[in-house]
Length: 74
Image (tube, rainbow, N blue to C red; front, side, top):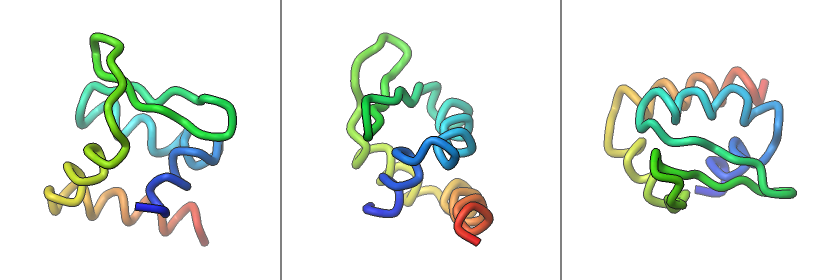
């Protein structure tokens, strides 16, 4: 979970990860100072933990996120 938050909080990483979250869930990642928040189509905040859990529950999404993260971190 900590690493997922890092992907959302660091602007250069967020620029890569936010489009995936938009594609998969129709959620928007919004910068909020040194952190970020996630919002659904109605503008309601969605917990980072729930998005993380949904990604982890889907092997294809989990794999794609992992590959993107490895590219960003290396």
